[in-house]
Image 1 (tube, rainbow, N blue to C red):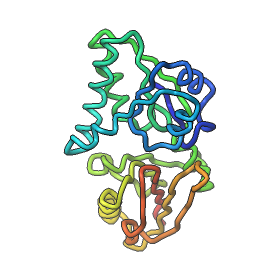
Image 2 (spheres, rainbow, N blue to C red):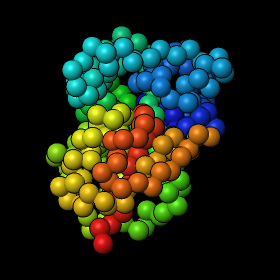
Image 3 (cartoon, helix red, strand yellow):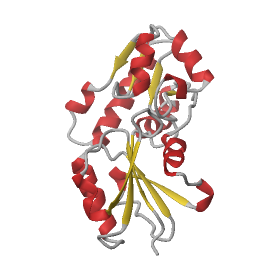
Image 4 (cartoon, one colour):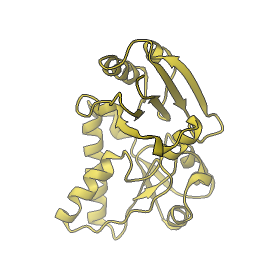
Length: 218
């Protein structure tokens, strides 16, 4: 399993680029990532698993199907290269499932990392991890709650529907006017950081490269 880094081809590690260039085919969780177009231009054969998003009712089902598909391929082939945005071990549920289930099927795994979205987001925000930051999955805020005593970095804010859910969860612990920083396209040439009040969170266009940061509650 290989990390694509937070943005384009240049954000990948040397090891990741080497593995991807030498693979006959690379399976990617999603083609909606800047590095995928760069890989195609470099002659890498890409097969996307985006179609599994369309046939599932929730993200949990999507990730379970993706993991199952990769494991099935690995059972039939000597080697399967599966690439995901950022670092495979940071916020990648399909990777977690693969690592859990692969030994049960006698499948060996290897992780080749690149920088995760965290480094790119922190750089865009101009803050340090040493300040104390809790990293949260936007899809799991019902189980793992934001902590007003530290900064919170919330990823997987894919669309306005998820942004609306994140807003409601945050409003349970913060005032409506709590300052929020919306990081869009961290690490890419189109990177933007918007400083907005919490109640406006779902009024802005967001995409698959969007992260929300909420500072410590005063």
